[in-house]
Amino acid sequence: MQENICSIPINDVFLPRQGCPMCRMRQMLEERKAEYITGSAMMEPSVRIKTNEQGFCFRHFDMMVRLGKRLSNALILESHLQLIEEELIPMEASKKPDKKRLAALDALTKDCFICRDIRQNMENMARIVHAMWISEPEFRALYAEQPFICLEHFSLLMNVDQKGLGKHYQAFYEATSRLTGGYLRQLRQDVHNFCTMFDYRSSESDEWGQTKDSIERSIEFLTGEAPVPPSAASDPR
Image 1 (spheres, rainbow, N blue to C red):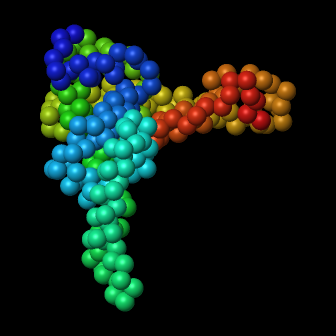
Image 2 (image 1 turned 120 degrees about the vertical axis):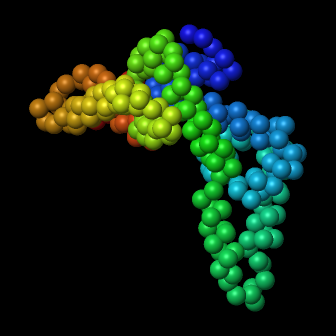
Image 3 (image 1 turned 60 degrees about the horizontal axis):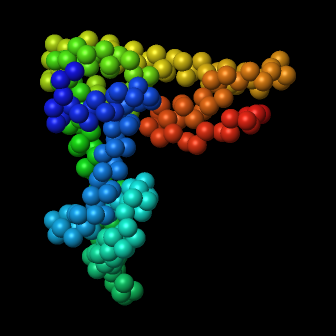
């Protein structure tokens, strides 16, 4: 498989053949961005202006705290909180509510600097996946060997730049739907089997098999986030 600066990150996330490769790609991009924000970009005025205005969601605040230094996070928070105090929440009790400021505050609570960046980068990565799938037979084979593509990233891969796929759109859809649809059917059966284990006719059985973590795997498929699985030694009942 021929590699270049664009394809290397794609190969890195597809080669393990574990879980959804697009989720793994998003995680890689998020961690790199969190490290960048709390590192070299912290004192860049152009970046700081945007982080002050947009803020971060809990997921990415948490990632920044885990991956960056505490002073870096504190400095980012200091200027972000200052902007909110000065521009969005007037402290004078005598003033009437400002509808524009309230609307801006509502928008801020739904915004995140890293989320915006990741959405754009994931769309670019999806286009690279398309291009590699079209031009590289080895990558097509690797793509087909993935355990599954989660629901969110099935939607991403099928909706981004449909024109770019051109005549290959139908074949790419079939390859991707096999990964998503096949796993979905297996999940549904595993969750069904999990439920039947609570039936009185199965009360003596301890053969949970792969149904035991079917709840966690279903949530991962639906949301791209994997909850902590139960202890291997515990009985879900």
